[in-house]
Length: 213
Ligand code: DX5
Ligand code: ZN
Image (tube, rainbow, N blue to C red; front, side):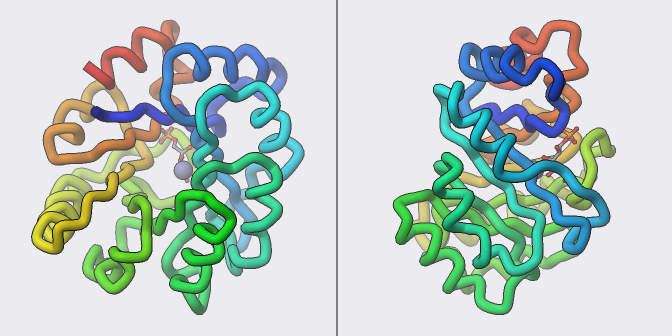
C-alpha cells in the first residue's frame, strides 16, 4: 500500500491549521522539509513550525533534513515531534552514526540522495536504514519538474533490496503528481511526497485519492 506524504513546504502558513487538518483526514504522513541555506540554496522553517504541526498532527511526521551536519539537530527534531527523520548521505561525515542516533531515539531513520548521486552509494547502508528517500528533483525548492531517470533509479534500488531480502519502503520526493504516481507505484515506490500537486490543487482530497488509487 502506497502512503501519500504532502509536503508542508507548499502549505498555507497563514492558515497552517487548515492544511494540517486536511492531511489528518486524507493523507498518511506529514512531510516536513528543513533547509539550512548551506546544503541547499534555500531556507525553509525550523523547530517552531515542526512543533506547531506536531500539536495538531494525527499522522506521523516525516522530517526531511536538507542541512549539513544533521547529527547536531537530530535530538531537537525528535523532541519537536518527528517520527521519521531522513538526512542526505553527503551531508555528514558519518552516515552510519547518524542513522543509529536516529534509531536510538526510537524514530525511523532514512537516507536521502539527490538525483546526481549514484544509487549504489546507498548500498553499504541498506541494513541500517528504515527507508530510503530518492529525490526526483534537486533538493531545495518545491514546484520543480520531475526527473524521469528516477524510475530507473527506483528499479536499481528495488532490485538490490530484493536480492538482499531487505524489506524497506522507497520514498520519492519532487515533482510527484497524479500523472506520474501510477508509474511510481508500479515501480515499487511506497511513499509519495507531493507538495505543489496537493496544495495548489483546487481539491487536495481528490488529488490525494487519485495518487493512491
Ligand atoms: C524539495 C523538497 C520537496 C518539495 C516537494 O527540496 O524536498 O519535499 O517540497 O515539492 P513538489 O512536490 O512541489 O516538487
Ligand atoms: Zn522533501
